[in-house]
Length: 574
Image 1 (cartoon, helix red, strand yellow):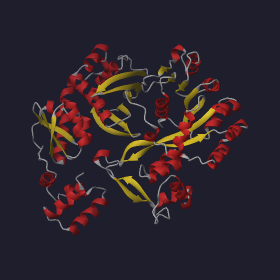
Image 2 (tube, rainbow, N blue to C red):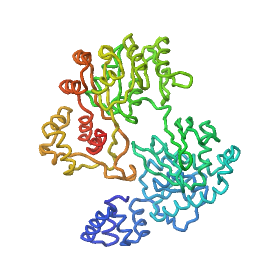
Image 3 (spheres, rainbow, N blue to C red):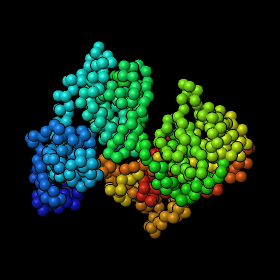
């Protein structure tokens, strides 16, 4: 999207469109859910080349018309296809020191810098037209179609030799490298490569949501699967059983690991790769999203020499990241830390990390027993899945060790009755539990397009069922948020949301942050647990003691402008 101010000035001054007409076009564009820029181009109100030539002048960059321009294949491929498609940027010429790039957003410094690092060439940026970009993107597909003839395999030809040969073809190597490299740049957590009847769909999970990136011809299916299997040291001739492996790669200066899972599906084999940043340092609690009060409780709990700290939430809620952050604080030369995980997600220097292997009997329970003979101070158990693991972990906490682990429950108060359901005696839980942290991940507002907004009627009604204004006002003031004198009703309160821009893929969101519920186990609560108190009784007690629920934690972050009310309601309703 062009800068709004620049577009308005050009339309009025250069194309002589009156303010009244501009207002009318804007209203019509909103009706058909288009930007003003899209609308005036689609309706041929102004000439596309003329508009973008003037925009280029206004932004002090040269203009290039890509339509009909010959671009060498090796130059075009310097920008990976999925990257070019997502960021609307293509390479059209180069010299020994310079790379000429055509884009619709010359201010996209992040993408330009990425291509500078990737190619080692100095970028020279040109403005072009949307139709010029579209034509250049079509050439990627045409080049791919002409290249894949050599990689086509029929079902009858898929022996090991043919698959190995297909995996080593340059087009296949280029496709796989592009998919991996672009996923890292887009800060994706997972890559999904899914075969369908007619094509292969590549999707990335970014900020918790999957979105399509590119569709590939079905003819490259066998080559891509074989290439990834070879990289992950898997059997390339095994198509009927699930397989798991790991790929280690380096992109620029960053070392990454890809956890690979391949399963047979109706149209072939589906690949999912989890991206793990191996050298990533654990984040401080502030960066994770802990508010000052809950953060203080957690810091006090991990200072205790023994006891158990539990982090709970559904799969993908960031529990492991929180545990690693706590380990980062605890990781000192004078302590022995051992972890047992499934799988090891990050390598942490100074921590002894083990991965379970049920095939040889190395389970969470067996590993925990072995750890207790290794003179540990701190033990991290990836997950408490059964009664045996729960009992050993709690006995370890009781005998002078600090134990960190995770559990699958919806909130903090239900964690304690869940351990009782597993068969753990209540006195053991009451005696050893230090603190329970329940969490979810929510998307953050994009800092580049974040704007103020007032709640719509539906959101006001939904929030009104959960909180009255006085309760919400006291929540915000207790957390140090100053309210405007006008903010006396839900309708008048100011919140924030991202409008959508190229930097956030027009989603309005960029990055994620945690919302937390921290339950401290004090002597009075320990007594209630001993008496087999229900989750409701525990929650009522915790609320009286000032525990913030996950929803309240999220609403504070919404008021601070970090996220939206909609994100908080979505995450806490699940």
